[in-house]
Figure 1 (cartoon, rainbow, N blue to C red):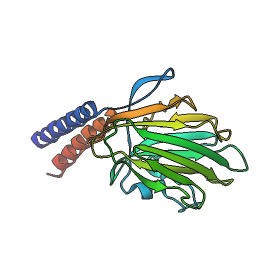
Figure 2: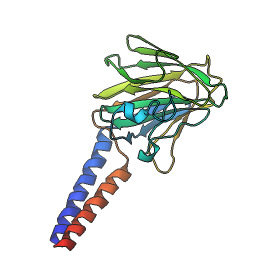
Figure 3: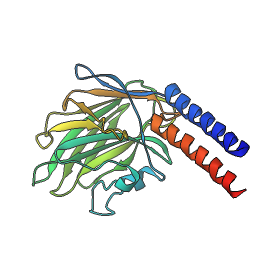
Amino acid sequence: MAIASRFLAAGVALAGALVATAAQAAIYIEQSGTVAQTEVFAHRFAGTADEAYAYSTISGFSYNGDVEHGLPLAEAGVATVFLVETDEGLTLFTVFDATSSSGGRQNSRWTYLDGNRSGAVLVNDDSPNRDAYDRSSNTFNFEHAWAPGFTDGFVFDISGGPFDLQGELLAAGATWLTSLVFVTPDTNDNDIVLSLHDAFRIYGDSAETPIPGAVAFGALGFAGLVGLDRRRRR
């Protein structure tokens, strides 16, 4: 009983530490007139951003995210945005999937508002054959085009500390998309629907990525079970 109690106490301490991390390293998304400041969380992936994007592993030149490990599916007509904690640190995924049988086209602009980050694009889907990636100082301008049955997108590196990134899907060439959605790892499907053509911000501190409270409770339960299992083996 003493061993189980010690492991249960350790689980409580671990859960408390995880919850504290979430509180100390909050990341927010907001969009004027549509979404007020809302705390968001990251998906977890044991591997690189390139492996998480899975470019051309199933269908060539497309996002093929590992759904078995909790990454979102691409959805027809939707620009899907989500955070993923990878081996490189915190990353921001954006995936386009058109409803049109003729494929799609979408231009976007991304700006580091804090002005003091180098930024990096870890995954360029189709570049340079079909897409264009242009950077001027802290602003990135992307032009995407994709064929029927495929998707398009990219991955930003936002690891390393405080960041303030503004994204905007430009109206020109956007007739293939009907909505913009930030996908959360929340099992209750609390995804955030954004206005398609209004700029939005995602900002916070990526030094310690926030995790949902459910993960903390999972750690608590696991620690308690380990303690009980070891007590039974004695």
